[in-house]
Image 1 (tube, helix red, strand yellow):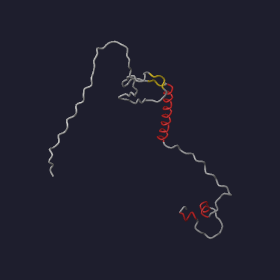
Image 2 (cartoon, helix red, strand yellow; image 1 turned 60 degrees about the vertical axis):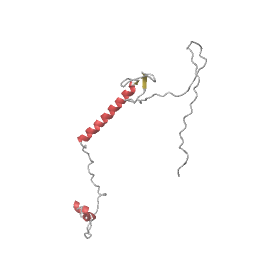
Image 3 (cartoon, one colour; image 1 turned 180 degrees about the horizontal axis):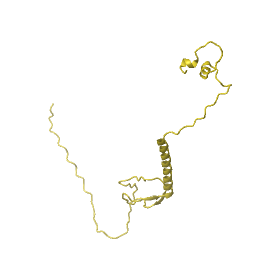
Image 4 (cartoon, one colour; image 1 turned 90 degrees about the vertical axis):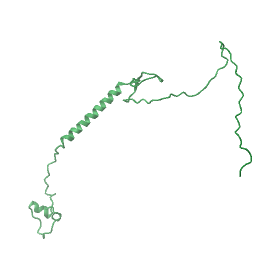
Length: 153
């Protein structure tokens, strides 16, 4: 259904009345009003500094907030800790070189103790051992020994 009323026009914004402003010529005088604000100030950019070596800082060469550019020295480290680190690195290198040399030279020949001669009380009395040595045991009928079953003789 169509409406018999004419379409509405949007209302024009109501004008805001202008605030009265007064102007004066600048003059010297005592400030009678002060304003104080609180807040945080943050840098637009922040960069993390990672040293090449670790150690104890001996001397700071710049202050917090100073402008620096790439390559500038900002602190010096104690030399003792660097020297100790260098000595430890040299010792580790020497150990690794010694291990490499031993691996390149191959295994060392092992010296084994001379075989013991069995005493008369510790001799084996099985038939296979006695046959290998050439001694005769009892006159019992021959039966296959454990060694011959396993294919050792």
